[in-house]
Amino acid sequence: MHTLDCGRTMLGLTVVASLAFIATAAGVSSSQSTDCSYLSLLNHLTLTSSDEALSLTRPVKNWTTPTAVMLDLVLLGILQLDEKSQTVTSHAWIQTSWNNEYMRWNSSDFCGINMLTIPKSKFWVPDIFIQEDVSDSGSVEQSPLVSLYSTGWVLAKARHRLTFTCQLDLFLFPFDVQTCNITFSSMHHTGDVLQLGSLNNAAVLSTLSETLMVTEGEWELDNLTIIHIPYTSIVTDGNRLLYVVRLTRKPMLYVINLIVPLLYFLILDLASFFIRGEKLNFKVTVLLSISVLLLILQDMLPSTDRRMLLMANLCVVVFSLVGMSILETMLVEFLMALDDCYPQKDQSSVSTNVKALQEVASHTEPAGAEEKGQVDPVMSPKDQDLLKLILEEVKAAHQKMERPGKEERKPGRYTRLAIVINSVYFSLYFIAVVIYLVCMYLAWVDGIEFAGF
Ligand SMILES: *[C@@H]1O[C@H](CO)[C@@H](O)[C@H](O)[C@H]1NC(C)=O
Ligand SMILES: *[C@@H]1O[C@H](CO)[C@@H](O)[C@H](O)[C@H]1NC(C)=O
Ligand SMILES: *[C@@H]1O[C@H](CO)[C@@H](O)[C@H](O)[C@H]1NC(C)=O
Ligand SMILES: *[C@@H]1O[C@H](CO)[C@@H](O)[C@H](O)[C@H]1NC(C)=O
Image 1 (spheres, rainbow, N blue to C red):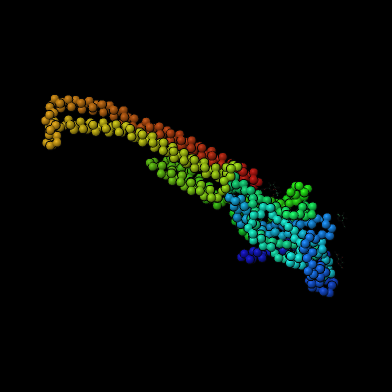
Image 2 (image 1 turned 135 degrees about the vertical axis):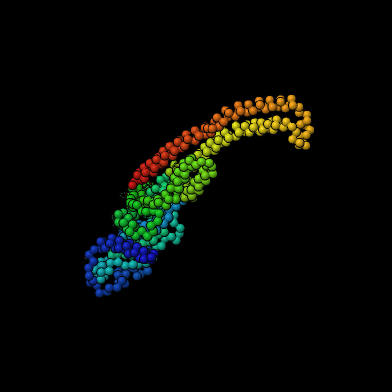
């Protein structure tokens, strides 16, 4: 499958190159010469002699003549985009062509031969490099041959596993669009001697990239623009050829993986206000689930201090909202417990006291218990009357205490407060969530529109 694709790619590139050159080599006529071998042509071009002078310098007859170097970049795949290290790894074909004034012939003199393939070492090759390139060594596969056309144009091709740096703007992640520069320039030659240009225009190259794109990963080539920054003076870093590549992320995976769960957890947290009974465990579980999503996000995104990414903003706000709702639940449960605790403690102590007193009062006669045998005989009927009197008093007091208590306990002073707090908090929480989500949606939509959709 892969070799098939490569074959297709080669074919495509060759067709493009040939189209470009045959146009210039028009007027090919039938053979006139008797010797139709390549060798005679090589002899004519003096390439058979071991004269290395040809490969030493720029092939122009008058040194003031600039050499035009044409560069075509075809992206065959976006393999990876690393948000942390801010690099893009791609699979690219780069073809370079330039004019060699010494290598021209009239094809009608050589049986119509208009193209030769010759080892690259025979020729002078321009020293073009990519400024953003951070590829490992060995990621470039240069063809050992170059094509030589009868008009003097030399064409070299290379296949790159090109890793280039790109300042990624992840503000709209995962709905982001990245614009990267791939800048070609010469190491040694200034713009007055080496003029960079492109053989095919951006529309052709981007159509070619789209049709030949082998890997359809997370990224889609959205637009390819070629900018030529001409040479103005030696001081300015001029004469560069800029390929501006715009890539669009396919966000579906992140929507499913991050945004939907986050919103779902938020809704779960909202819904948990309607749970009767134990809420705290549930809410803490939701908070822990959100922190797992935060960990995933942290693995993916770099920490930028310029402005907070919308995705990070969403995570942090949802986390804080759920955290705050846990605190509120704690407060409500504390208030409820307060209500339960204090009145009950008093009542129970009073009632046990009353019970004990009742017990004592009912013991008008010794129950025959050995332990109480010593106390009871001492207690005279007068004492018992007094005790009964005290009991009556205590009962009355107890009832007095209990009656208002019971009326209050129905709603409960603290419970009422807790219910009020809970409903007010829920309303505010709900409104805040709705407003926040609307703002977030607008921010994303605005950002995406601004990014040029
Ligand atoms: C070389 O080129 C310069 C500028 O184009 C021109 O003035 C000069 O006459 C040329 N020299 C020769 C020998 O052709
Ligand atoms: C090539 O040679 C043919 C025949 O000798 C001639 O008619 C033609 O004009 C030449 N073409 C060029 C570009 O010199
Ligand atoms: C790409 O090049 C253009 C033109 O020089 C420049 O304005 C822009 O800032 C560059 N972008 C990056 C990410 O370097
Ligand atoms: C690519 O972007 C440039 C500049 O933004 C624009 O002029 C051109 O029409 C775009 N091409 C396509 C195919 O969208």
